[in-house]
Image 1: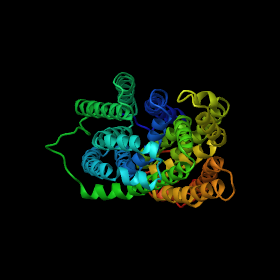
Image 2: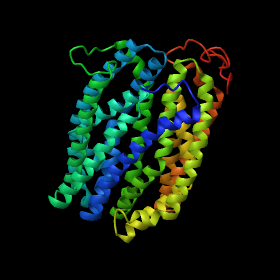
Image 3: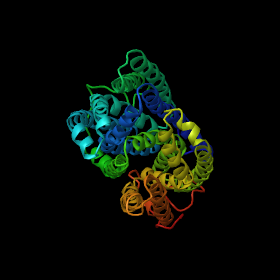
Image 4: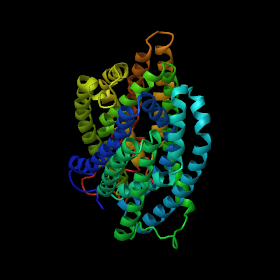
Length: 467
């Protein structure tokens, strides 16, 4: 387990974020292979089906992602304060939340798949495959939630390497199963879904075995598993706003998918493939956000708001540089990259256009995410939720409707709405961070600042003490 309250902030954050980044590269590779296999070996309709299913799956896991975020922050802050009894209680409570949530989501997801697809105005030639894919994935939500929960707990303890190893193994297994089920057995979209489910299940089992063998504070022991109501309420207070935020994001994705669906199967397929590449490009910022969240949690627990401020500046500098590089990559190589998924010229054109417009503004996304990571790590998760409402629902969705319809910009209008929303999010989150109110939101009150830490305790200082 890694102590993030010591050492050079830039080095600590990069060292912690790098395993998560590599892991997410494999996670996106995992998703990219799914799309590439169905796009090249099944067809454009299958590629569109997998793309249409994505926002629906994200909706169903969003609230549980929030619960997981609450567990991560509690574990990080109690670990930073060296209160191992509370670490154990937070982990036990997290396990129980994930089990019942995963079971509920499986049932709801299977029953709601077709009605949601109809609500999204899914084209007839895509509907059956999308329904099949969703029902299979939803049937295994316990495995998905279990793996994500274990990863969140380990990140809270400062261990970002073990989730990486589990994910690499799952990704490699998924590639093999994708090719076996789709290319050899000809199971089509169902084969991709089963490959994903089996791979995630294997990761979950391996994660449980690792925790039971290596760490007494987080060992899964059904006989001594205890539910802590107070910690559950704290987890909800921290995680529910994040869960609501993720739900709003997923609903926004679904709203955008409905708009894209109105332009036909080719537009859906191009958008789906471009999003896979988009996710790769945005991963560094997302992982820096997760790293700065855990970094902030541990240092707030230790009373080191001075380190949080320096860590934020370091993450912003690194994130900006990487975002510029990623933007140049997708802008100039977007057309070539799209050929990994399909040889359909019309689909390639749609996806490359998306990458050209969105890729040039990744710096805005990085700024918004890193700022939000600090807020979450400090326990001030309500503000990122407000930020999401402003960026997505006040700007992005209305802009997509306006630009693509009344202004006659077509799909380009949808793509331009993305950076418009990011701009709002970046400006609002920067304004709130500079205000300094997040410094007073920690769940765990640290023992006080160490020598040279600046204002006493940092947690009780006024909003502008270190802004």
